[in-house]
Image (spheres, rainbow, N blue to C red):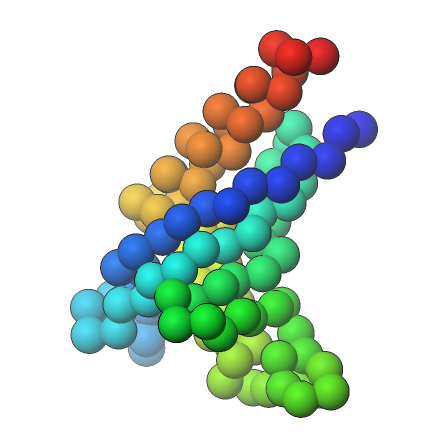
Length: 105
């Protein structure tokens, strides 16, 4: 099974807060997607001003950081959900990457 990686740029990403998609919090940056022909997961998120988020352990010395860990989870949920605009774009870019590599093989 072949592993792939993709840089997925995003802008104006809106996360749900208390079940509402208020547009007062817009995020910009890119996500590192990794996976195979069956799909991808978000490995890291790089916000526009230089902050990097990982699935867990975002505090000093790799300890949990509740806010940063939750922010990662919520951003990754938008990118991984093909019912959101950004999620559909990520899924399309991923499918194109897998197709290109399949044609090369």
